[in-house]
Every structure is written in C-alpha cells, then in structure tokens.
Image 1 (cartoon, helix red, strand yellow):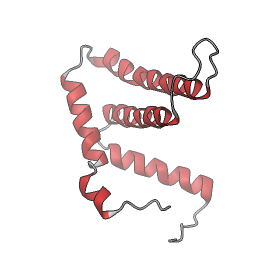
Image 2 (tube, one colour):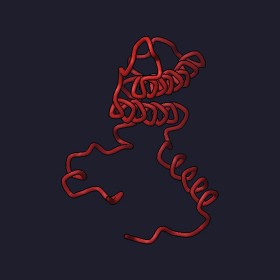
Image 3 (cartoon, one colour):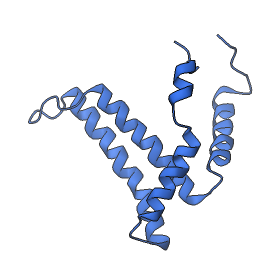
Length: 122
C-alpha cells in the first residue's frame, strides 16, 4: 500500500484546496450570523464534528449497552473526514492563505516530530 494516488484517483478526485474554497464560499453565502459571532460558531462546528467521531467510535465498539453496536468503522472514517474538512474550512474562515498556512504548519510539525530527514520512496 502506498500513499500515492493512482491515475484514476487523480483524474476524478476533487482538488482539496479548491473544494475547501468552494465550501467556504457556499457557507459564507448562507450564514445567518456575521462578525465575531459567525466566526465563533464556525469554530464551534469543529467541536460538534469531533463529538460525532466519539459517538461513532462508541457505536462501533458497542460501548453503550443500551444501544449496542450502532456504527461501523467506516462511519468513524467518514466522521474523521468531516473533522478534517471542517477544520480546513474553519482555517479558511481565518485566512484566504489556507494552503500556505497549513503547509507551513505541517512542515514544522513534521520536522519537529521526524527531524529533517526526508522520506525515501518505496
């Protein structure tokens, strides 16, 4: 298994950063709260999505004896994707330079965690 997309995946997959911009534009055009309140609500949406991950994990593991197994690990994957999308849209709400800010931060985290070594191709 590799991290590289197959040619089929790259031709049909939506562009991440264009999609984040599109979602931000759509949400911004349909917001009901402006200013600081709108910004805070956008950030709080992330907590809601993280809660849905927790709910899916509890449901996938059957930890609620009253409900039993209510979710699958595919549900957990889907909820995690929602967290990532929501976080990137929240970041886009703070800055139009979302890609650059995220890439710069990812580089710092990677170097802090893995050192300055580069990953060798498999």
